[in-house]
Length: 522
Image 1 (cartoon, rainbow, N blue to C red):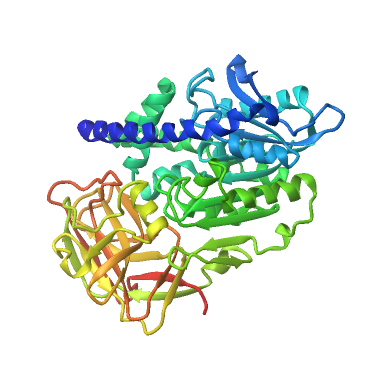
Image 2 (image 1 turned 90 degrees about the vertical axis):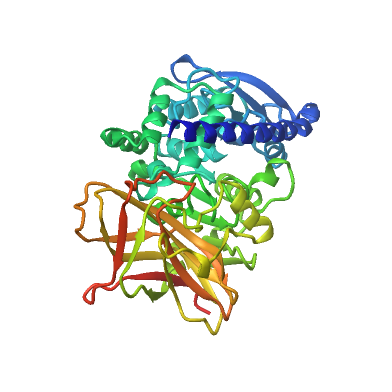
């Protein structure tokens, strides 16, 4: 495991190098025009005296005689403070005071990485305090936004600081544990990317180093501590506080986000009671927002500005009257509107998983969720998700069920779910369920998937498995089938199958097995 982990971290370090080069490019244009855009680089004292590197962009001609709405932008994980300068300049031109700061533990800011812990939440409030005291910001009209790490911190800050009236959380998380430990399975490539980039650009605290080490080591004795650590850093934990504060919350994410899957955002969104909006698009982690960071036209950032215009400025731009759930299909590229998340999955069709099938563990069958970033980006830009030949999948290591050929296109929308009866030969194990769109030649394009791990089961004794696959929007053409494939190894995850383990899937008459597929009404 140590060699595997080091290889993943090395890959992550290489990935961040490219990201940082891009980040440098992001900063050039805004900095070159700093004089006309009133950019100031400042140091702000955060929680406990930690110094945070920041920059402030004010509207042209601001002379202190009037107040402007304030937008605070915490940086993404591992990115420097000029990450948002292109968008900050646009927002300032629209009449906002914009303050971007580097979160503690990274780059110019002091302290150690807290992973959106209480010091990070307190820092956000300190930054707002500073902005209200040192800029022409209006204390009655404060918003926060961010991509990834900045999104998570923004949601948490809004739950703890009543001054925050509007939030745009882009490619973030509401449930940290449900993101990188979904199905009780370690998302090892996601963790290695975060770990590797933090090693290059920041200062990990001893607590964070221990969390990563326990995570990689599958230390079950530490699982309660890991769950508590993640819960403290999840906006879902503070949902009641957030609803009581009643900020307007816009959330956006990508269908193929390999760090923060769309499911956890959708579940959280459904429980918010204030003004809210959910946008889901093709792509991987933070890729839908990327062009906007270069100052190029971008739907996510355009909607973010419209959101703030309405809820901070009071502009009647109609965003509050639009369908609040806005989805973009991975296949058609068109936008669809829904009144709520429940309506997305209102119509479902079951595919029976009949018979009894036994597979052997510890060998990758060839069915995989892809490679972090690369696979979902290919799907985003070229509609090329991971592909496998379903007829050639070795049945010794993969269980396969297929639907009949569809006579019309099937528009999969929302969260497919698996229900089956499993009998393992060992007390612990991992399975990964994949849903494929299978064409006439047997090649299957990945629609969605999810991992599932169990511990402490009695060998030879059956139990029910209920697993939600990652939410998606995908159109299956007429003449194609859907196939459910289950195997036990995927490079995205740490698996827990002992040597020689076997898994038997059955479908008892009184409790039949199935995969339930959510379909859009046509």
